[in-house]
Structures are given as C-alpha cells and as structure tokens.
Image 1 (cartoon, rainbow, N blue to C red):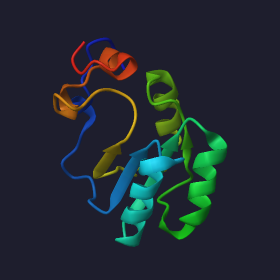
Image 2 (tube, helix red, strand yellow):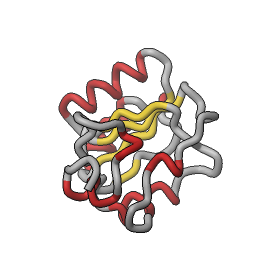
Image 3 (cartoon, rainbow, N blue to C red):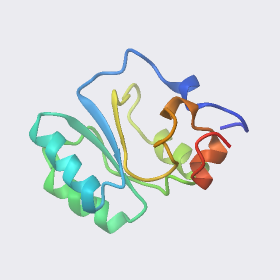
Length: 124
C-alpha cells in the first residue's frame, strides 16, 4: 500500500454479504463475534497475530471457514498484504469486524490511511 493510499480504493460493493473477515479472531470478544457470525451462517476469514490462538478458534468453526485462517499483525501493512495474497482467488469479504488495528471510532474505515492503521490514528 503506497503512502496516502486509502482502503476505500480497494473496496468493492459487489462483495458477498455472507463472508466476514474478523481481525483479532484468536481470542476474547473477537473470537466470540466470530462464533456468533458462524452461528448465523456466515462464512469466515479469521485473522490474528497469534497463530496458535487463531488456529484453535478456526478448529472450532471448521465448516464455517471461507479459507484457512490468516496469521498477521494487522498493524503491519506488509504482513497483511502477504496474508491477503494467500486468499483463494475471488474471495472477498462483504463484512469486516475490525477488532484490532487502527482507530475507526472517530472516522469511517474508508478514511483510515496506512499510517493510521500502523499507529492507531484514523487519518494520519
């Protein structure tokens, strides 16, 4: 992602609403959200920096996974690019549960820049 690149540049309105990407899915509230989404019939893409934890949750949700879980630090743009490159061709989440990485409390996700993702500030 180039400096100043905005995530909305990569978004598509045609993404399926039955696929959710959950960051921080290896534990806590985000793992519970993933379980809840799975119980509602969503297919999941789980992301966490803790490989063992995200694989444990993935093991619980096996048949609801849209792909293998991704191990990446979501504040590291290069790690995310590498992880997302491993997604099956054409797989696009229509729902994002951003449990970690970047501050989207005060601005929309579409205004989050690379620097904001890495440092927790929504527009810097």
